[in-house]
Amino acid sequence: MADILAYDLGASSGRALLGRLTDRQIVTEELHRFPNDPVQVGDRLHWDILCLYHELKQGLLKAKHQGVEVRSLAIDSWAVDFGLLGGNGELLGNPYHYRDRHTDGMMERLFAEIPAAEVFARTGIQFLPFNSVFQLYALKQAGSPLLSAARRFLMIPDLLRYFLTGEEISEFTNATTTQLFNPTANRWDSELLRRLGLDESLFAPVALPGTQVGALRPALTEELGVGAIPVFAVAEHDTGSAVAAVPATDRSFAYLSCGTWSLMGTEVERPVLSELARELNFTNEGGVNGTFRLLKNIMGLWILNETRREWERAGQSYSFPELVRLAGEAKPFAAFIDPDDDAFLPPGDMPTRIRGYCERTGQRAPEEPGEVVRCILESLAFKYRYVLELTERLSDQTFGGLHMVGGGIQNALLCQWSANAIGRPVWAGPAEGSAIGNLAVQWIAHGELSDIWEARKVIRDSFPVVVYEPREREAWEEGYGRFRRYTGLS
Ligand code: LFR
Image (cartoon, rainbow, N blue to C red):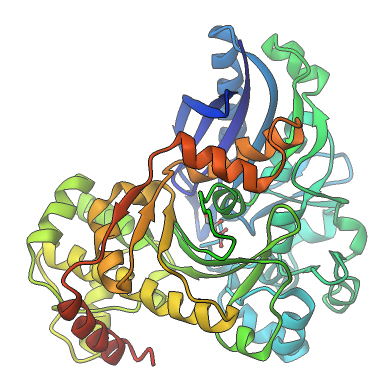
């Protein structure tokens, strides 16, 4: 049996998915799933990169033990984070997690040297404190020995791919998220690098999604007893892969990739570098097929995940379905937060931060678990509406509904509330968006699907889409007005 393999690494778990395409139908099988637990060491928060690499190998071993012949593989993961290689080709230190606090205040300090407007004009990327540019700047400011010893900068999937193949290559979609890549010149931005004092030779050649970028290196094929499987670059930024998998029929469509983060936007042919785009803090991340993803990050289910973790720490365990049920039973529209308030970015005690936010904004703070979760989910649904309308304004389009993909769509209440909040249908599916987009780009590279639009059609025919029609319009309309008042989102 010949299959292809997609590794999709999310902020809290990773998976290896096998995919087979027969008679224009995709069948997937989850081969391996593993937790991705960041590690706090002293004041620093790191990714456990060698553990992730170990899990990639476990996926290969499981394929071997099942007698699967893997024709090719590719990796996608979260963006912005990176590892640095020394002169001997070995990894220097453990990559930092983008929620580490070493970037606090760095954005403002960098803008004092290079104006924000210029950084945006050169890169088209939204300002998020954890973008690679601010992480590198933080290392520079701290006089980190890592940076002085570094010979090569590789992002997380580039790095894991390097471990697998020995090739040092950066992938385009993920490279754009560094905020050091110039989409107009289609290369690393030499001027920005020069002014930041970063040597351009640190940055690897950039490959487009759908390019073969090596094969498993001999030491690894020997270690595992597997063949020299070809390795492809896909949209290695997981959001890029998720958008590739949106089963849209209309070329003008809005998406929400729903997981730890909620990423909402549309696909465009050219980056939108206008003053308005910068003011609204939209991003233009590289996509597949020469497209760009005009989108905005929304804090997403992270707040709920951290809330649940906090209660667990305090000895109260709830399953997600239980929390969602309690939220459904709580009083509607009782309290609102702006999920994108800075307070919610770092890991920690979300219930206390939510309480603080409500007190600051003159609201009665939610106390009971159901009230807290209701506040989080309603606020997310309203923020989706807010960002959807901004996307329409910025891209001069009107969307008939919203495609939701990613693990978050398993939360049917959130999908329904999103439909209620936006007043249009939500089309939910597929849940494994990133992994399926990863597979699709590999099939295009193999010549088995002609392009992204054929891929989207095949995805639509292979995975059910659940439709949520908007309900209780009047109450949600009224709730939206109050959400905007309390959050100050005008
Ligand atoms: C989603 C995601 C977002 C990116 C954030 C941090 O998993 O990749 O697109 O902004 O993680 O890398």
